[in-house]
Length: 414
Image (cartoon, rainbow, N blue to C red; front, side, top):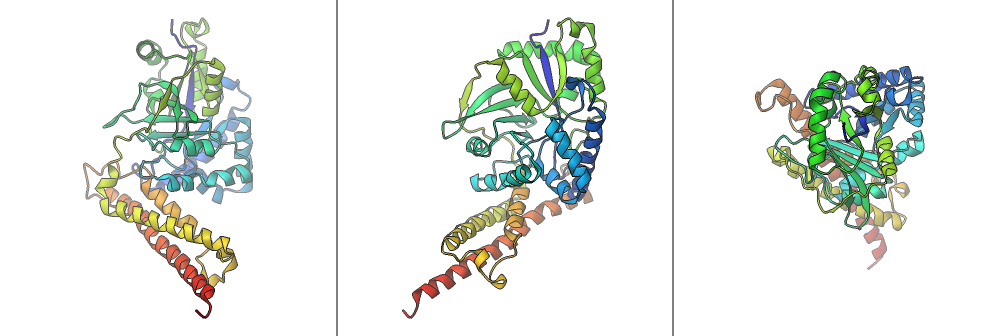
């Protein structure tokens, strides 16, 4: 008999901004996935709760782009499904790297306010996959943003995780506050185990192995969360057959008798609520979740350095503009000819965050470094670095020029 009572299956797309396709193609594929998700979630509205289709928005940049172009009717349907718990929106802009400092990470969380206030999305959890770690202050910044559960699906190819997995624990931040955190299997782990494709493989091969692993690491819970994707794995569409697979699995006599765990199509919020209900004492870990393989950035050292300098300029511009605003000389009080365009700051920071996002190189970049796929994706990636450079120079120049005017005006005839 398995030590698990139930496995929570969290279904999502793993977002690579590039890798499988050129970046403009990725954005359109992500748009199509959201449209398909709406249809699948509505298809299952009257089905038993634990077997109905659910979808988790792993990263919000694709959603933000969809919201800009979707019509009111589609947005209303998405909102209704989110309110009902069939779609969950999580907090991370993308799958991020430790290149993000605190200022940049805060900027990446800025869209959450609009998503909550304009669309009513709850956004209580955050998740990242593929990446191997995050800077320690992420704990406090997520808590500040109203996030009360975080999960990681580390890719162990050339990497590792700091503690045994799967494992739920409390990650203690520099402030001493703790964030419920889950160190789970890689994002395609569910499908690899047979979830969504092969009940026999799951029952006969993977569950015995899983029980042995959980016993070895003294896993403390009677429930487990497993993320799963479509077999395309990266930039993948929803798996329409997943709910039918879960129904087939749960109808097995050995599942009904409790010999094997049941499956539940779930969202991260449902997972964390179930963890709370277990009332288990989770271990506490304090410190940095050090990254193992954010080595894409060194393959483009020039652009990485350009982006870091752009971030420094943006922080300088922000500090000067804050002082000018306190002195009633902020952008809102200046002539349009003496200030940057209203969206320039947002575009500059978004270019920085998109360059520092985790996707470096096409899937064929190692085998065919001179191919069109490799070259095209690199130019799309590098463009973020140089966009950030241009816009940060403009923003800092405008802020310094206005500060100089204020100093000159204050000097009078001296």
